[in-house]
Image (cartoon, rainbow, N blue to C red; front, top):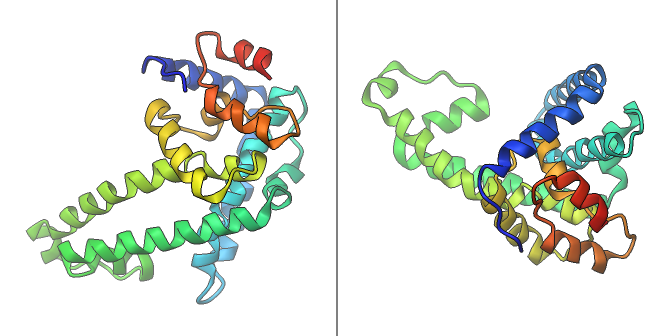
Length: 228
């Protein structure tokens, strides 16, 4: 894997902005539709909130599919919002389940710092008592949860795309995603797309090889197109 200077992150930000400005109205429409859909799913009693979390990898792939469409100079089709449901759905739902368990474990661990005030507020909307803020226990719990969540975020950053488009084995997805995230730190769907666009070959072995070696150099978009 090629290691690039940290300032290359600005190139990915610029690339992400270019993808956004290619169709800003449709991007905003898709994002609004996504949050509206997630909100309706969350209204389902008991299982709604959990289902919304499990579907995060699925919709992540959908947004990456939108980036791919713009990269290929195609218009954003509203149906792309559900592209993740057509891309190795069982693997993506498995990732979502693991992400749900990891998130629940982090919230449970935060109870060690504040007797569960943060977890009850995030899960059930129970107000945090003023004395918990006064003692700083909620802040400590939030910092603990953040510290535990960062490795989970790194492990799952590229994992949905690796699972959906590269058919990478389950045991390698999170480790590869964590490694690439720690080296690149791509901060959005668009910048993640510009830094990890999979190979166009339909053969999974060639695509995985591309993922291992393709960390963009200067003028990354043109280099990626030549590599693919």
